[in-house]
Amino acid sequence: AQSVTQLGSHVSVSEGALVLLRCNYSSSVPPYLFWYVQYPNQGLQLLLKYTSAATLVKGINDFEAEFKKSETSFHLTKPSAHMSDAAEYFCAVSNTGGFKTIFGAGTRLFVKA
Amino acid sequence: DVKVTQSSRYLVKRTGEKVFLECVQDMDHENMFWYRQDPGLGLRLIYFSYDVKMKEKGDIPEGYSVSREKKERFSLILESASTNQTSMYLCASSFGGDPSGNTIYFGEGSWLTVV
View 1 (cartoon, rainbow over the protein chains, first blue to last red):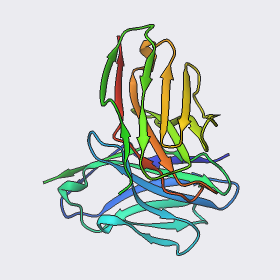
View 2 (view 1 turned 45 degrees about the vertical axis):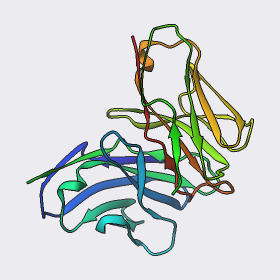
View 3 (view 1 turned 30 degrees about the vertical axis):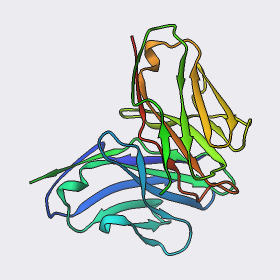
View 4 (view 1 turned 90 degrees about the vertical axis):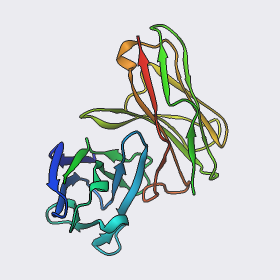
C-alpha cells in the first residue's frame, strides 16, 4: 500500500531564507511523486512531479525536489523564500496503473518579513 | 488553461437536506474526482469516475453518491446531510489512459457547512 508522510504541519521561515518541506513515501513499486500547492481560498495546483526521469525535478517559482530512493524521500526546496510562497503544500504519490493518488496531510508554510 | 469549475463556493445546509455539488471541466478529461479536505487529514478521495456513467468508490464513500451523465460534468450528492460532512469539497479532473503520472487539475473548492 502506498502512503505519504509530510514532516511538520507548519513551517515558518524568514523572507529570503531557504525553504525545506519534507516528504517521505512508502510504495512497493516505483512511484510517481508530486508536490501541489494551495494558496488561500483556492484549489490545488501542480508545483512539480517526478515520473522516473531525472531525480532532481524543477518546478514553478524556483521550487525543486529531489527523488532519493534509498531514503524514500521527495523533499521540496527553494533557495530563497518570498512572501508570496505562503501557502499549504501537499506531497502526493501514485503508482502505475492506479487511479488513486494518495495525498499527505499538508504542510503550511509561513513566510516572515 | 484547464478549468475545473465548481458551481458553489459557499453553502450552508440543514441536517437531513439533500445536497448537490456540481463540477464542470473544459479539457475533455476522462477522469474526474471528488475529494474532501479537512485540516490535518489532507485530501481524501470520495469517488472517482474514469468514463461517462462509470464510478468507483474512493476511501470515504459512505453518505455520498455521484453522477456522471456527461463527460464534462461530475456531481457529488449528499443524500442526507449531517454535521460531520461539514468540510471543503474539491472536484478535480485528469487525462485518461494510465492516470498514474498525470497531473490532477483542481477546482477552487466548495465550502459546505451543515447546521
